[in-house]
Length: 210
Image (cartoon, rainbow, N blue to C red; front, side, top):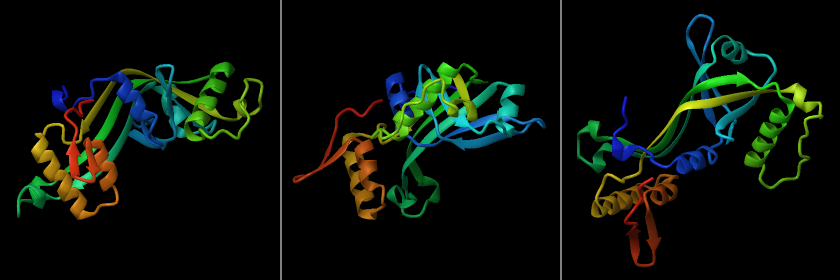
């Protein structure tokens, strides 16, 4: 299904940047009975692939060995918009601001020790950017003690809704209501919407397209 153009993230760099800014992704594989199994995972996007580390045994590894076609998804909810923002009584007007990426791809279990070491180091660089750990080399025992799942995307699509479909006046009014509601994510939501708080009030960027 084609994404509505104005909601689609056009830039691959933006998609990759979003992926690597998030801590948890979800990989979906097909079990022996034909049911999808969805597992939350730490991950990193590097060398045009998703890498995840895993215990050396498990159902998801069995699933991937049997059927390498998988799905992978990452999302971030930026803020719930109550229905009364748009209409005093119509509950169907409730909405959510969000960013998401959905990947369809082919998974494999990495066996090359150099690639496994690369994946593990890439994961550490993402999750522990302050360092203070020993770089992993292919000769280390830890390389044999974990499994590395690699997903090569066949399709990768990003979708976002941060008010880019609204005119500037409406976006500013929405931002004001979000602030008044006082949700914990209000500041992050406004940043994603291209809204800045200044001494003079709220200011909206002219371009928040991804």
